[in-house]
Length: 394
Ligand code: AMP
Image (cartoon, rainbow, N blue to C red; front, top):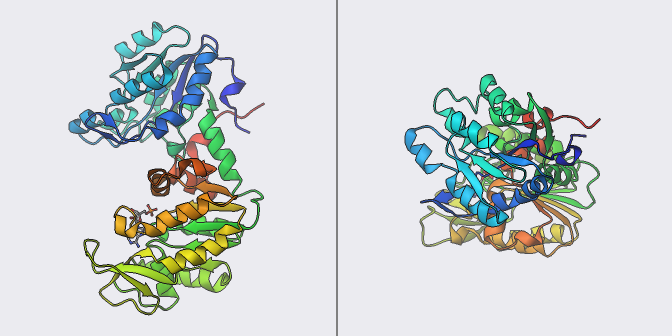
């Protein structure tokens, strides 16, 4: 078991909390503050227990000087100040005299936020390549390190692995909650256990399927990745997404688990995503010039039968090109169906989390992961670099 923030006496200690404030910002306005809100529990706990709180986070990718303007964390400090009802001092540097002075002036319960850790990527990718000196430097600013950034926990960066390798460390409440919930999908999930996979690529999810299919009762497949399965099953898929090099993998799965894998029976097609007209096609009816862009209503009904009685549901990947309204029905209807079940519903992060939140079903799910890539890595059994280095409980 990894140490958690509760395992330390935080009074008067300088505590770095690595958060995930990687939120969408347009013209200085935060478009979705969900990740900021998710970090509050740990920050509040640290303050309540007398810590001096130093917050670190990445935001976007930094490749040019212009990116630095676009991806400053300043708006996050303002939003955090509102949410905490406490001024969060923003330091527009990632290191140096200003940072060190601000920290030396801190009192118990104060909170400061340093600038985007990925500003360190501009010269030599120091953050993303876990530059040893950078990790050591950040560690020298504090007594204790708390990792509460689940979204990057599979990465080997200076602001997670680097710091944790140099000072006492633990996970925060958000990471603890993520691991606990995702573990439920691996260790003795309540049955019937249904996994829904969608999104664009089979190749991204091969290991996940391999690791979870033996644990689940059913695997419902939609989204772009369904078409490689449908092709493997012998259907014409027109111009739909196809990963030729995955056809044999899909064919083997269909052969090995004929009663577990459930494929769409009807598809919403168009000749391009801008096409005004869409068609509902049964398998076997898709024309050569058509692209499958959503699961059809009959498929939704079939999927519903499996979901209604389930006790555990894991969903990763939208059922169609949901960013465009006319191809969002499959994803929307699944949200509705899942929300109405009594199952332990766990939503993988990324696009699926975004779809569920945007469609208004956030409070109906038991757990929505804040990390797309991280949750997939965890569920496929990979070691998470920044979790591995956290201190173990004695
Ligand atoms: P992923 O990151 O693999 O979960 O894929 C998410 C993306 O897959 C979203 O942007 C969806 O629009 C896209 N997607 C889902 N279904 C389809 C489809 N049938 N054709 C093309 N793209 C799709």
